Image (cartoon, rainbow, N blue to C red; front, side, top):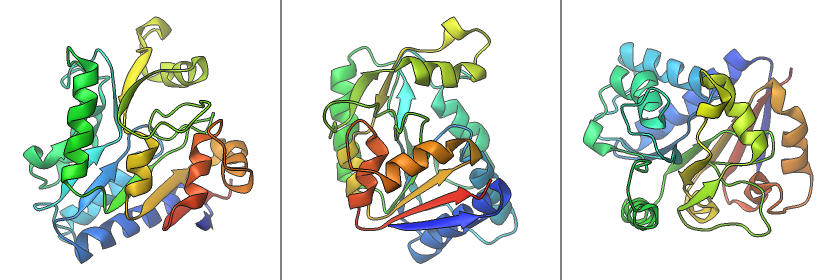
Length: 235
């Protein structure tokens, strides 16, 4: 595991975009595992700038996102599909048919979990998986549990996660209580992992990457990954 400390969120975002951009240049048809939330916004903005400058071509890239809220359709402004379209996909030349997220509006979430697991496996797992980290150590929506969940599954979100996400909704009661997420198995099968953490994540970064590997801190499993990089801001 490589841990890189930078001076600011801006430098964190630029470095993360450099790493992802290098992956696209080295393998134009790569599979990128992508994440949502506030942490990757700067990274996506930097990738868009590089595309607009003619430095990156996303036309052959395939993407798989970690997760989606249950109960939201892709055109809902609070859905992660909408987030990805708005912040990245609509701004670069990626083929929308090659962008994949779990369907949070599926009627049968068990069947959707099996479908998405099979899809990610068929793509050969991500060449590079971008991650954020929750205040409780979750990656994707893999919340603290007694064991590490391996496959795509639905999860009941913890109160701390719901509270953290409520800032993005008009009313706290509007925050979905369940999500569908890639399991730890798919994340660990990614050829490379890149986790970014802002200044508000200092305590959980310390616990996850300086403490024991435990499903009570899901991100700690990344200590065992063959090629993991963590970038955090000195603040």
